[in-house]
Length: 262
Ligand SMILES: CSCC[C@H](NC=O)C(=O)N[C@@H](C)C(=O)N[C@@H](CO)C(=O)O
Ligand SMILES: [Fe+2]
Image (cartoon, rainbow, N blue to C red):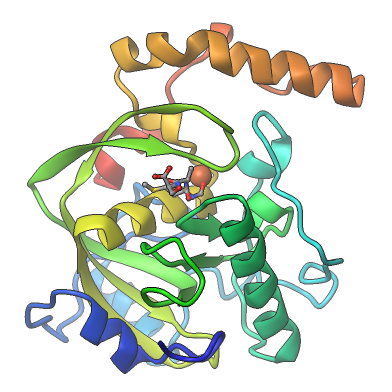
């Protein structure tokens, strides 16, 4: 296994099934607005600069400040719906943050974790589909961008660390092509399929403020409605605040329809 925090692009490639990926720019989904297809000229300019469309809104040192041990933020905390800033400082603090995210992910039996789930609103995710320290490969992705998803979709019974104990079916593309930066700031492109594609998409959604129940059918959503309400009640009694969202008043977010395709 590669050392924590230093998973290389090559390690990621060796882990995952891979088909040749064209280097030609293709329409890309912006992390700021996942449903928006960017113009090829804009994509090219962004690729040359090496940043996503959020370059005007990067995280400051203050945005990246954290106190270990990290705690998982649960639904319906508004942090999970807040905007997540891009990262352009690849320093020791970022490595420590990723390290701490792995710690809390393993402790809570997770296979992936996004920064907003630990209260840090930035474009960072970690995952290890093996779910055990010392097994599988630890992947860290910074400023990920999805530029292609497969037409083929698959159902999977998903759980989310921000919704403890709740599992339900979510349909997502079977495979996906992404651009991202690694923990040192190096850029790479990769194709994901199988469980890595599933975990990536779940975490990528978190980076857009999208939660797994936003992608459930009405029928599936009904099956977990009472559990979601219980979390809303728990939030209200713990914080003394009104829940910022209620499943009973739920209106599906337009941008999540069609897996981010306009
Ligand atoms: C299938 S994508 C799930 C990713 C999720 N990450 C953040 O919320 C996650 O790790 N969820 C866990 C509840 C999970 O899926 N855990 C595994 C291993 O225990 C499980 O099979 O429940
Ligand atoms: Fe989640």
